[in-house]
Amino acid sequence: MVSRINRAIELLDQGQAIYYDGPHSGHVLTYAQGKADALSWADYINVGMEHGAFDMTGLAEYMRGLVDGGPTRSGHRTPAVLVEAPVNGTDADNVRFNAWQFRQILGRGVHGILLCQAESAGAVRAFVEACRYPFQRAGVDPGLPSPLERMAGAARSGVSSDKLLGTGTRGRGSESTAAPIWDLSTDEYMRRCDPWPLNRDGELLLGVKLESPEGVANCEAILDVPGLGFAEMGPGDLSLSLGYTTIPRDPYPPEMQKARDRILAACLRRGLAFLEACSPENVTSRLDEGVRIVAGHSLETARIGRAHQKRTLPV
Image (cartoon, rainbow, N blue to C red):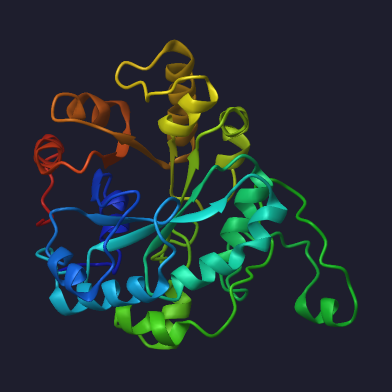
């Protein structure tokens, strides 16, 4: 008997690692592909729109195919689907100007979003706020003006701490398209589409990719922002900024290893999942270090990792 809509969150809440599949660009978003992916071995499907097409019609059809091809072997309606958004998380204004992307993506019924190029706490705060409905109050600065005070002319002032949020900015309108994917009423969808673990009943998984020197330098402040569920070091873009034309892999050069260890440690201190590519040869040692989201698109890696953690949830 499943306990959640989002299988990825259900497993993370049990201390289990999760394994994803899906390309970072060139994803085929069709109804037929959704039906084929409904019984995927993966715990979630990554949809890469940072470098792939921003295809909302295709995403809607893909989600419909997942529903019609399901349920999963674990009993969930669909595998979880997380989308890498095209917007760069460099600063708060850039994120707010592009918040329409998050509304469009969430409106198709996905279960999470990854913000790429995260470089500041302000940008990540704006990201989380854009993904939340304004009636959700967990983590919101209690000192902010109330809606009635704002209607009377009070300014929407900034939050008082990096560890607090402003009011959510996701508007009403897309719940009628997203709720049927989750098999919920619109009211129940709006209640449950909130970031976990900030909201223990939330079914939305939000993450950040720290892939620039600025992102690494600010990683602790970024990961203090409420509403995040996971983070990763982006070795591709970080290595580019450090002068590497090919992506260094295991082992990383010293400066990248130091960045990776810093982000991992920051995640562990805050109870956030850390995402990293693993292979059949190193997945058990990575899990023992604390990695909880496994990239690599490898069923064999997942098989070894699941056995190592004595996972019981059916795949």
